[in-house]
Image (cartoon, rainbow, N blue to C red; front, side):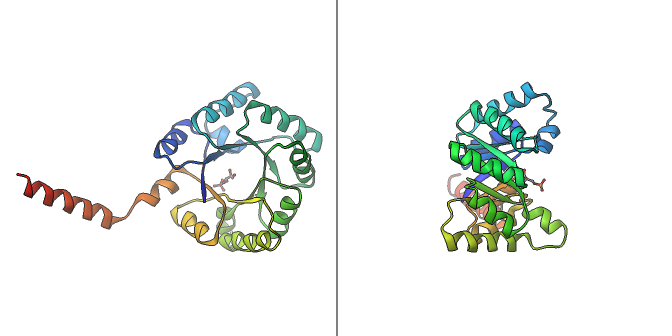
Length: 218
Ligand code: E4P
């Protein structure tokens, strides 16, 4: 499973990259705004900066909601770097734009996916990634993990190449459960990735090893 970090914060991206397990980055307009990145030129420069830090795919979301606008913006984003994946909302114009970019050889990430039907359409349009938002489904008492499971079944039935990018991951167990189901990618905050490191028996065991070593080497 690929690990993407879901942030526009350069320090968090660097920290995840330093761990050596990072495969890419996802951003969205809210995450960019949270970092205070505003204005077209600053936004484009921020994507360039992210691409400098990581080796893998970097999702950059279009703001336009009409087909022509998405094409114009997406082509500008794609020109920044080969790592850029154009992130498009799951709408009628978004699906048409996804098909357009697929035919042009530009990578896409269809975002804001909340149903199997939407994921099926995204795959039919040739999306590189489809982003089901599992945390936001959990937030409204709906089983987000179940959606990932059902999309996995449908994609496997037809051998679609579209990768399931489990998004809106909020914590470490989301990552573990996505891995059990067979999500191709997960994107989550730095804390969810770092949480994978933790086990109290590891800490206790290491402390004991070091104490025993110290006793024997006095
Ligand atoms: C995915 O690409 C989105 O950026 C993200 O995962 C949304 O997560 P949230 O529901 O925690 O905002």
